Length: 257
Image (cartoon, rainbow, N blue to C red):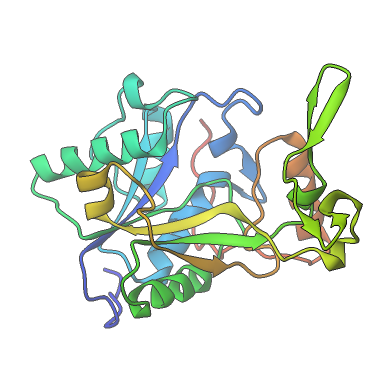
């Protein structure tokens, strides 16, 4: 039985979403990185952070469910096809999960989304985000962000043989697209590593984030997101060169599947 941190004051659940229909990388969520399937690192980080009452894998796959349970996640039921498509918004499957959990007597005040595609998110990352969320006053949610490398002030909309800047702002008389990067205001982009939100946002307002959102700044490779084969190669390179680390897993790899 893991020890629940004293700083937890509300019933909370971590959702590990693991849809089986990835098109860019087939079975991405269970593809091996190091010795373990990708999904394992998010499950172990959630459990080791000691801030959640339940860590639940939200999957539509019986195969994924067995792997998730091997690493300690709960899988009380499988997601139906209607909330498991590649265009299904998060609010749909989160609301479905919360309502189904309520039917079996499990109700929560806070939920977090921890995607398997962020393997370098450590238990300490989650704990740091949790502390920020709990200590902030009058917020609806917290979302991981990082400073963007490709500034939107230098992005364009192309229409046939013409184009216009996506952000038609200026520094004095100089358009953003003609300014040096260092002269532009800092802009942050969300990463996929984590979100924490009050359940009321989704059940009462059909929103993951609500209106008042606290930025959680990820460090180093915490927010690195794996979406394609190139990302897998980058992740393996970061590991081999010692630039990043994976959460420690004290289990052998699961039986061959």
